[in-house]
Length: 283
Image (cartoon, rainbow, N blue to C red; front, top):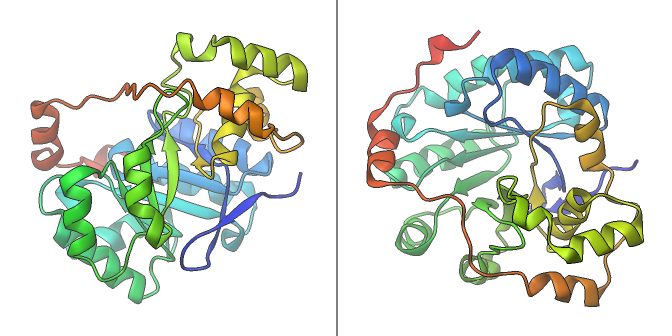
């Protein structure tokens, strides 16, 4: 199946769908990255806090897919904001000399300094694009006002129950594209069981999951579902041989109820800033 891409606001091409590796141990990440790349995925997403960067790097190397054909995405953890060596160390763990995009993972701590790190790495050719993750409201406005290079991508929880209209409107003038995490509502059974998805799954001979993932790409969202099941990995990408109609997209839009499944507490935010990542725990 031919790769489906979006163009970012700096004219870089990014695949519409990729593999997310959250909660994968290094050995699992190695295997699933290998499976995904051999199932024609070309976007792989990881993060410092996942502690699987070395596994992701091994999976890429073992796949035999040339590095320049892979869009490699990583999120920088807040305790790394301001560390002048953080990006180079990340590249070393992944076994690569550049990343296709690096995100600030959370809008906490000295995130403006962190963003300036990304700008510097972008100018040095270590990053092909810059991203932000989980920024909205005041943190988003402050970052945009304090940055010279505007982000190419924002990662946010996004699914048919929660489409982040306000953030998208703020970013629309600068062309920042949205990348969806929790794209299936964190596996919420209520979302997956919505009658509209069952109806469309029958019409198009697809699963409800495939209908939802196709909805994401037709919304203009990059989507990064995670799975450790090789069959699911293949099925998740098999969404480009049909197209939802305008009326079907409008019917799905009626599900948007502003319902988020991600609710960080004050103690979570404190941990984001003060809990260093134990990179030596990686294998």
